[in-house]
Length: 460
Image (tube, rainbow, N blue to C red; front, side, top):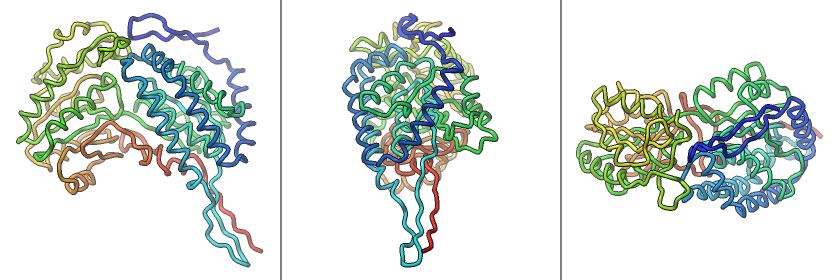
């Protein structure tokens, strides 16, 4: 039996080991999902919602255990991992609460001669491919609305965080979700591509790298199924001349370094108006130095290791390349005792004197590093913010909401924030443009992706 191991970034130990699914197990999973979905699509929205809410409560009841497991699997400080479970609950409850209004029949005409209506029918089996960096928060974006819409779900978790799929399965089982409606498979990339090509799969939701998105699209070619892709990012922030500097510093330090910078919508480049540049940089650097890098299970730790040593080496290489090109490192890595070469532990870094010839300002970093550039005007800031193949989110820090809306309209992103960053509002669609993906999750628009419109024209 072929297995895989979860190597914890905390101490490089083998934290868990699981077997890969066999071909027979995959076939049984597909049969169970198909059978269960046929009955589930006839269940009322109220029944679906009641079960899903029970599952949410069951997951919340085990939040402490799930949070510690998550810290072991991917390295986020234990002081923060319970927040991911709370975020799951927030998004899930919102999507459950709005389902009935979104999934109701749309009546076009009801008369003595005709009834014309549009009904949102479930797609069938939804394959949810979930990353390791936010496995609960990304999973909920698809799983709950897919089930509420009458679909069955197969979750393919990242091999770094497989226990999250087991915890979700336990929660749905505790809630009484009929067997076969939510299942998970431990499979490798090649088997995932093969699964996407199977006629039983009706929709694929993928969160991961842009490279992974290309592979998903290639696997789905010729299937005529929809694919939702939430991919990489190089999210910018602009601090205007009228910004509240203290608030901007606090928000952007968190946005750049939370989860060790391993967030698709984390802040990776900052543009600051020349009137605020020096005071912003001084405050940003000072606050960055307050991070405590170390064992994520210790309560004083505010910055944990990256997911593995390979990832940390890649980011360190990007930093060193920028310095060779003229960037200035504002943080002394040696001041963070836990930071060490060839380990997942990497100190946060702030780079000054950067420009767009440097990979650190152009390519996705996905680590604890951010570059800060001075700009002379709003126009220059917008030009630089759009100078990227990515377009997930952007952040504008200003006292003028009209200016934020005007500038945000010019940004080539799926989401624009004012005076905040790195947050998903479940009432708003989450999506990216350019190399950051296609489709959307969350909000009422998510239900349009997870159903297909069926027209009825009844003539009496």
